[in-house]
Amino acid sequence: MLRVDDVQHNPEKKEAAKIKQKYTLSDGVASVKAVVSETVHNKMSEKPKRYDVIRVSSLKKIEVKKNSEQESQWIINLSAPAEVLVNNLTHTLGTPQEIAQIKSGGVDFSQIVNIKPTALPLKKD
Image (cartoon, rainbow, N blue to C red; front, side, top):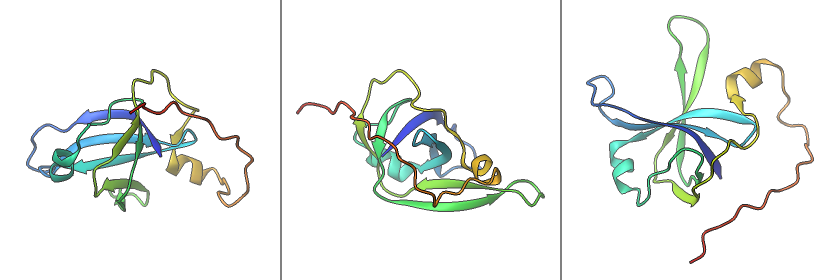
């Protein structure tokens, strides 16, 4: 499960004709940019909005080089429609930073962190 921090509609551009929507996804600690193709976007029964909590069932991780520098950025390509689990939230959860900034700071992701699970209100059917 991830939270949507930002949503950007991609206008029709020749260089990015297949990308319909751009998202910033976060787990409350780290954030990553994500893109959705027009095909996947059209299959979504409910389109994620800012602060929605979503479930991602299929994705591809893509490394994109920034300009001519040695730096690169990871982007997630959602290859299946995301499911909105919780909507109508109004605040950011945690204080997420871009994943590349966290990794360059020397954070050891393998270390065990004691985090209490947070109960999210789920939709009543």
